[in-house]
Image (cartoon, rainbow, N blue to C red; front, side, top):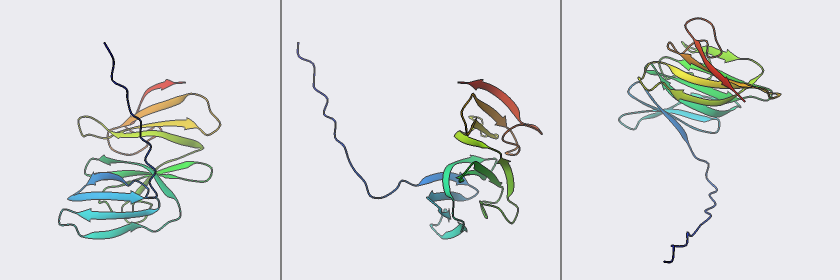
Length: 149
């Protein structure tokens, strides 16, 4: 019996992929540092005008948590109203330390997020569950969900 041969095709794209998260009555979409809020009618407004690229994003309690890739560290913000995702307005800085983000995902129940951080120089990674989208590296209501190599 002959087994089928898998064909592997490499596709090269010159266009970067967008990172998106549901937010309010629409979604936030990021392509590098170009971040926009798009409502359910397709109307689009810019919600970030900084120099850092979006590394990850997750829906959180009707708002959005956005992690930006900084020069020496990653920085996370929670925007409860989907605006000013890099700070300003009602947006809060929810993690800023000498760590890199390795993952950000909405909790399966829809309440809060899981965030995984690793020190920029290596070491173990730690995952935290924040039910209120704040204190993504511990503190407040956030719980350390475990560490791994």
